Amino acid sequence: MPNRKSLYAIFFTVLLLWSCMTDQNIKSEVHFPNGLKVDTIPFSYSSTGHILVKVTIEGQDYHLGFDSGAQRTIFRKGIPLTQISQDSGVIMIDAYGDHYAASSVALDTLHIGRLNITGLGWSVQTDMTMDGILGGDVLRNLVWKIDFARRCIYVAKEVDSFDEDKKQATRFMLINNLPYVKFRVNGVSIEYLMDTGDNGCLNINNALQKIHPCEFNNRTISWYFIPQKNTPFEAYIHEPRQHSVIDTFSYTDGAVEIGNHSLNHEVVEFVPSDSPTRFGLDLLQRFDYVVLDYPGRKLHLGNPQHKSYRYLDNMTRRINSMGVQLSTDTVPIVTGISSLVTGKDILLKDTIVAIDGISFLNQPASFYSESCFMHDGTGVTQKDNRLNTEKGCLPPKHTLMLDQFTYRNDTATLSIKRGNRIHQVTLTRGNQFRYLPDTVIHFGDGPPLPGYVVKSYQWVNDERGNYYLLNTNQRPFREEDYR
Image (cartoon, rainbow, N blue to C red; front, side, top):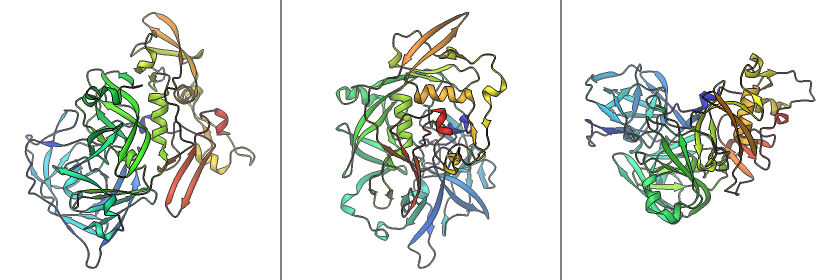
């Protein structure tokens, strides 16, 4: 079982605003080799499911996030670039209102695949946990076809290089290098930022929920999370970004109409008013490929695919859930509660000392360690072995307890310590949304862990590329699924 913390936010997915450097006349130029109309750029998925493309600067390779939700290309400190200014007046303001100091830098040429990009004379360098992001100042010049299963991005100067039906395309606007697409959710026409740097699906500003209560308030589940300040340039993956005040997030299902496609039972997340309305990579992955035609200002969608593992995860954690989110600490605390537990004696920051009578206190070291075993040819198959770890190890009992609570159990009794008193609260999983697809698709490197670990999964390698299909007919995280 991988370290749970590694699954959380390590990716930069913010809308950039600038206090200086807003000159839109500063544009990069792209140079194709003679005779080349379409270049193929392999990409990799990060541990959090984001798209990373390899670039070369001065003979050194780096991996940048492919981020249509960023105005400009940004590099982390430590990459040797020419400093234009150390002026602390260069300020970046992210979509959550946080300010970051940066320095302006220049580079002669950025190599991506067989392409050379010049004119990046006003790039930005700042503290980041990754090499950087490839932003709108580069993306706006080209047509990008993202093939999810083949893990390739095909790039051209014009959309005619691809065999696309122009009549089926959805138009978008480009404002400050950022693409905005208008489509309908639950019958409401809304303009969304198309953000490939966000691996979520649909995030809608809370203000729109209030404007359209009939369309969005039916069966909405609200969540409250403890205050927590994220480090710079980290966005949420499995849990919402949290600030110095309690944030509220709401979830419902939605019917999406985009282009000539209809997507039903999508998870819609309502985010605080300081967050933008946007859709991310998870929605785009409902199709086998997408084409971002920046010069033509059009979005082309390929053939519909299965819903994703992330969809399944959101349904289980946020909608059909116990109504409580627990931390992964040795002795967990309550980090989130939802409207499903209204009337229960449970509060944010409560300490959970036991689940169903199994205590987290005074446990031996083995309670927190993997349990490895030998394969005798009749136990774990090679495929099952790959599902867990190459060594054939079971997750720690501590991890299994938390994951069973989150993903499998229909009821659970929490022993809660508050002050000097311990009391018990029994929770029941809510099943407000009955729809669950039989199969979901997963494009990451290996089946998703933790979460929906099932025997019924299939590693597919066909003409479309490499991916996993997971059967969802049984709710997983049974220990016997490992053996």
